[in-house]
Amino acid sequence: MMGRLLPVLLATSRVWLRRPFRGAAGVPLLALCIVAHLCPARADSNISLNAQTFRPALGPENLVTVEGTRTPAALRPIAGVVFEYAAAPLRLTESSGRVDVVDNLAVIHVMAGLGVTRWLSLYAALPLVVYQTYAPDVPAFIGTSDSATGFGLGDVRLVAKLRLINNQGGGFGLAFVPQVSFPTGHGTDLRGDDAFNLEPRIAVDYRLRGGTFIALNASFDYRTSAQEVGSVRVDSQVRYGLGAYVPMPRGFGVGGEVAGATSLVKADASVPGVGATDAIYSPLEGSLFFRWTHRTGINVGLGGGGALINAPGTPLYRAFVSFGYLPLGGAKARARPAAPVASAFLIAPARPVELDADRGGIVDRLDKDDVADPEPDKDQDGVIDREDKCVNEPGPRENYGCPDLDGDKDGVVDRLDKCPAQAGPADNGGCPLVSIVDDQIQLSRPIRFAQGSEEPD
Image 1 (cartoon, rainbow, N blue to C red):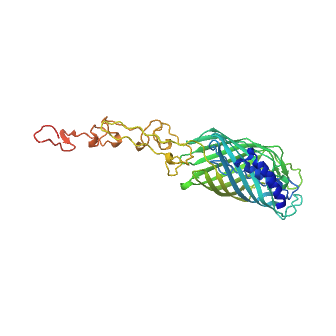
Image 2 (tube, one colour; image 1 turned 180 degrees about the vertical axis):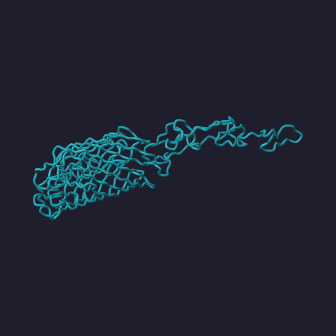
Image 3 (cartoon, one colour; image 1 turned 60 degrees about the vertical axis):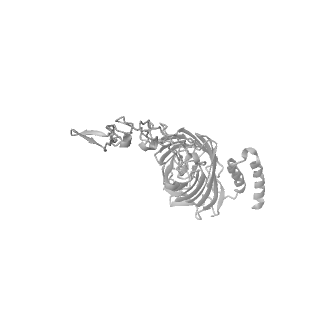
């Protein structure tokens, strides 16, 4: 093994040292070069199918495979690695019943990319199959006559995300998220499509206050060639996914998704082999996950799921662990002083509101690591819109962002005025010193006169 590895490392190091391939963006290329030289250890079959159909998403505020609409900051790198295990991911059906072809599959998904602008990002995904075993009783026509383990490269993907509607302040967001995959895996190893895939995809999400969001993906996956075995024909297909994420305290969150596809062409019932059932290839898989995200963009995820509709590529169950650096875009929100309240009785103006956009416990003017998007403040009163009850009128935080009113025009704002319908001095709580009740004069407090004077003291 070392005799094969040494020349590969020497050759790839020359590529690595060239300027265009330095840095984080060259990591997938380096891994691709090494794996491409070390992967000829194969257990070919007589059929071509892909057990490695898991396509994790990379980027801020995505789910598992379902993409959200948000993008990283301009010129900000994004990176992630997902460790995946799938049990029985490739199962076929013949007249005598179900046939397990691939028993176990372990894959490391290495992903890296860049936020080109605040509304455009690009990334590459490199699936490395590190462990693959075949069922011992696979039929002879499939051709995997032994249960030898296999390892190698799956199909490499390139993904772009163009954000069309920004919903950082809440509401609907929209993005165009096309992806293309290359036949770097081998279908006869049961870990490649043996085709180029071009998949234009639309992502829509809706953000609620507090960070909860719902995401929907819809796409058409065009393949340059199909894979067909008996009743299974994997061809160009409509793909879809729906999921949600709910944040919890201290950076934790929980989410789930359902993702599937429907092929446009049925299998040819005349093809020998697996018993033909005249079924359309329609995989469907569900997943649940937990995620912890630090305010710097570093995150860790843990989840699992399994097939809701059995089809090649959907396992009995799947487990995965992810690590990533996925920062959000946007400049820091800056504190703005609230408008002072005019008063003839010298009521002190409201203090400036100190903001903490990333909720890390450090106000933004002191937070050097704050990378969160600014919270919108339409009326620029220092109270963000989701906490502002009057988003179109400036007002102090003490009045929930609404302007202070003074109904009796005595210079004491109504929320501090004990007698909002009667004018009075501030030192008397806004109430008049003298009032008439039932034809009687009442004093709110004693009036004292200086000795020998008719003027009040």
